[in-house]
Amino acid sequence: MMRAIIAPPALSSAALSELKAWLGISRSADDAELAALLRTALEICEGFIGAMPLQSGCEETLSAKSEWQVLSARPVRAMTALAALDIAGVRTALAAADYEFDIDADGVGRVRLRKPINQTRVVVTYSAGLAADWSGLPDAIRHGVIRLCAHQHRGRDDERKAAPVPPAVVAALWRPWRRMRLA
Figure 1 (cartoon, rainbow, N blue to C red):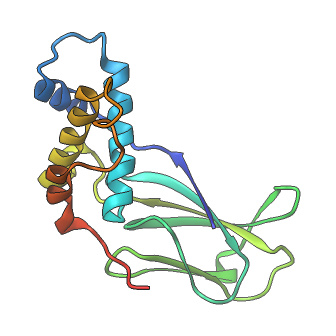
Figure 2 (cartoon, rainbow, N blue to C red):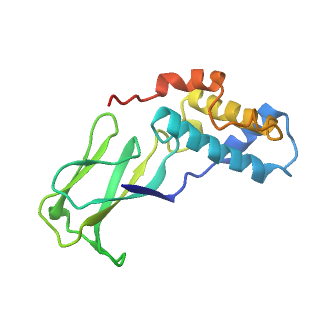
């Protein structure tokens, strides 16, 4: 399985403004650095809670199987296409009758082939995310992202403070949203 984000989430100016207000920054000289911190914090959030915070367009390469296969990003909002992928990397769109998509109530996306194909891999195109935009995120997740960015920004010169693991206050905000998997 290999997932790629083909349409990253659009970070609104509201996200940057909220971070700048939290940090007490009024000038725009640091905007690029702060936007990078926001993107990184969103990735850390996804890893911690097991769900993509902001809606993104994704592609995932899977084995060509008739058994149900689970997509790695959650919650899946829509699955839009399935294509066979040959060894040279050439994609061939499959007819809708050749496969099945399923999204359960928890946003887990699944795909399977209805009949065998000549290739050994397929590419699924889909969108996933808790919210379509920054203002649609739950307050605890949004505030946790801001606090993680502030933590990283303030600790940028101290290797110990800039660790990618969220600090306890951020983890406490995100913990109710965390999806745990039993193995």
